[in-house]
Image (cartoon, rainbow, N blue to C red; front, side, top):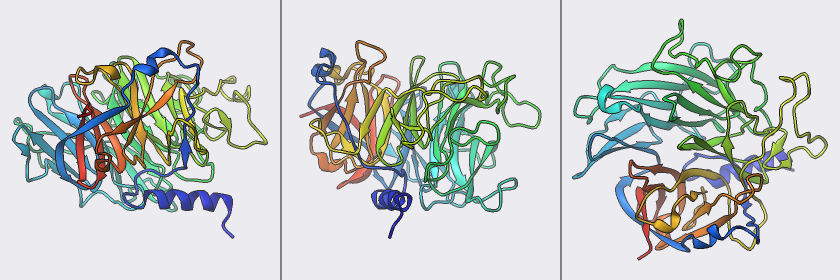
Length: 422
């Protein structure tokens, strides 16, 4: 007989077998029938215009501000430069001899430095075989590293890798991995809780698991490959100074819209969620899953008084449960997206567009409620010629605010621009 925890793990692996990227649960969404009119103006259907094809499992795309060039990361460790005349044959960077895959490991995050046009620095987050300092019973080491590109931006300079941070990972799944630069110029790093069965998320004193970290990668502090911003929430308090927020299970894709930080968190068994993250926030795992009790026998709304003086467990802005609903928002693992700020699909303006790993030709979109304490109303947006999007892996947004979808379908793996339905 399979235990409840074992059954959850089985469902997770069955769902992600094709790419092994995100582990979780089956879910669907409920939209408030009294949701504000803003959700009614969202399009029922959008199209996908292929920008980059011939990929296998694209997990991130970044857009260079100094020319018609974008960089796309493959889970196996390759990064390709794509220009106006197409994708270059030789990888911009090839880490296949360094990156370990299997389970949910691989090259998981990519970000260009805000001053990439001048300093040519880019950052990656990847899974490596266990390195010094990783416990013997752990699975691997997560590595945040910087590289420098050539002046023409077409290749990473050989030997330019500089390791910023190494994160011991206990399991080969629930590793998080996304990275992004905020409007403050600091690097934000998503780290998963590192295993199933309800583990991780609340200990901020011994490791970085289940967190969003915030690092100054332009400075160095002692022997560290980075400096800690003075205003990080645990500076001068019990806990590791690198923390920005905690209480996450498997944060899969984070994004900024001005000062707003959106973090999608893959659920364990019943609920998927998206959080609007604030500095020092505790987002509930492994006490809550979405707005609900993870363990029905114990479900406080705040930590005990002896844990940082008692702090509230913050609810997500979006969640969808396991059971189907009339909205049709259903899946297995939430994939975080972006707020749309482009002009090609004006009816998407200011909506947070995201999705689920089992896309089946659908995207999701949510709009801000009139009452900021309410969950955001969420709806399905069908994709014209939906076979192009069977498995959704990630999203991207360019300098003009246009939205891109990374995934796999009948055309193989690719990067697609969201456009009006034909």
